[in-house]
Amino acid sequence: MVTKQFRGSPEDADLRRADSLAREIFSDVANKWAFLIIEALGERTLRFTELRDEIEGVSHKMLTQNLRMLERNGLVERRVHPTVPPRVEYTLTESGQGLRVTVDAMCGWTHRYLSHIEAARRRFDA
Amino acid sequence: MVTKQFRGSPEDADLRRADSLAREIFSDVANKWAFLIIEALGERTLRFTELRDEIEGVSHKMLTQNLRMLERNGLVERRVHPTVPPRVEYTLTESGQGLRVTVDAMCGWTHRYLSHIEAARRRFDA
DNA sequence: CGGCATCCAGCTAGATACTG
DNA sequence: CAGTATCTAGCTGGATGCCG
Image 1 (spheres, helix red, strand yellow):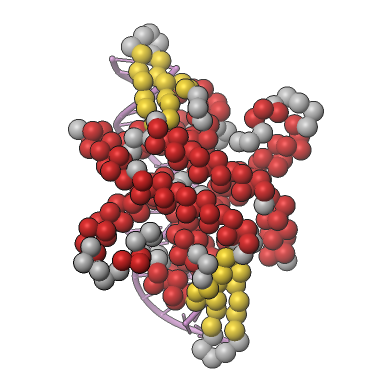
Image 2 (cartoon, each protein chain N blue to C red):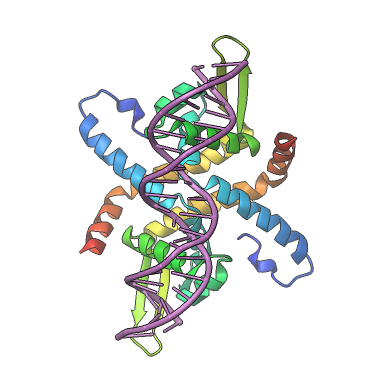
């Protein structure tokens, strides 16, 4: 990805290790639900159920699964309040905010090219 | 996504239609292979096989499928040269370039937070 | 409320083979 | 070379139920 220009150089081994990890992270995160969670959270702190209501069509399972993944990668902080009933809150960390900026940019792109894309589709489907 | 602040307003219907389309596009494109194809193309024009060699681990089928999807959405232009053997070239369109900028940003983010993420994972897995 | 385990229908994607 | 079709193993994700 970023290190292509170094191919064959002595730094190769290290860079390839970094690159394959980068790619793995990239694959983890370049996923519809992860993006929608990051968008939904924004700068807010939300509970599990609030998040579930915020993201249309997400199942309980997918939400848990993706939240775990994001937590594991340090993009989301999970805070558990030991009350009855339990209260669990999710917030984007600093790195999560960093990614959010790029996801926002993607949303902006989507809206900017919406009609352009619709037109392309009509052309293609004919 | 972007239109949350309008909930309940009279413009609702139109905005929701645009939003659901935006989300559909978003889901199409927020996919590992699509991102890797966009990154691989960059500002270049590549043939099918070059692209296949450029993107490690992509199968013939996945590449065709995602290229069709990107073409349908107008992000990629496909040019067929009627020679023997055939020569098919792929290039990012203007809107494709627009998306590439945001994908590049994501790659930058990945590299910036690489060690941060590794650390988070080690913590989580323990 | 939030999380986990289980079950299983349906889809995904790799392998393979064939066409122009 | 590029694309399409078929077959299929395996994964994905929805539904459900139970637990702290």
